Image (cartoon, rainbow, N blue to C red; front, side):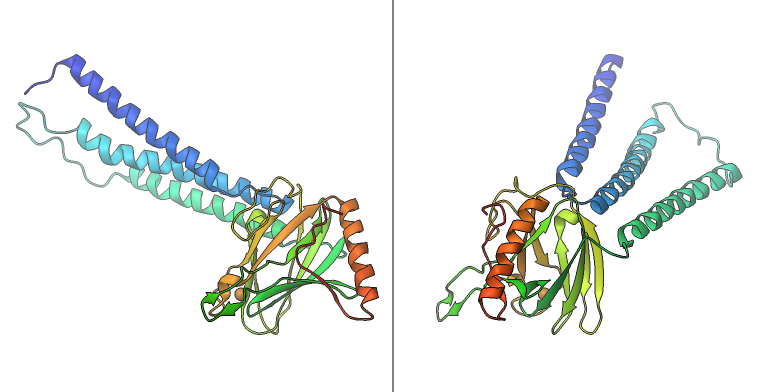
Length: 288
Ligand SMILES: [Cu+2]
């Protein structure tokens, strides 16, 4: 059955619209799928991710057009009874398709190298230091001077777990350079706050550390599962034993004033308990 010219045009338009729709859907998926960065360092990584994503999208569309378009455009037509001109060994073409990927790989390497140096850069004296202790299967956060924040593990009874775990709430000030010093009491864990777009292993016998500066507070974060509202989510990202899934924590990013008030309150608690550590789980800084 032969199609008329207008039918062919309509079919081509339909195909174009389909390709366009898939492209837009992929683009939208990428925009909503990537966690929003909440730190200075994370914003740089987010930009790098977008650059990589756009290059990948252009290559994907180009390759798909070549895969589907060329066979369609150069298919055998009615009355074609001869082989088209056969060619072999085009030096220009060989050079171009070797050079383009090489340039892309070198560019991405250079951009990543630059970014990794920025992310791992450290001020000699950070605004604040917090010791993060990972152990099977909980996190605790040591602010110094006896102020420690811990959570509560789920309690197990004969019928399984009786209580949901209460993740410890790490309170930090916005706009200040914070150094997390990571310490493991047993096996390898991984300290991960998705909103920072960064994670670092917590290795026994080795002190890993990194610095971040939060650029926004966490007050607009919705509650999710065991995570309460007003905090970013945090978790252990390294399978570290049977109750690895309990190693959750919350990160409440507040104004420096709210942070100081919160820390003073914890300090007073620590002093009252006569040398004992002040421990808090669900105390939020915003409520004080
Ligand atoms: Cu762990």
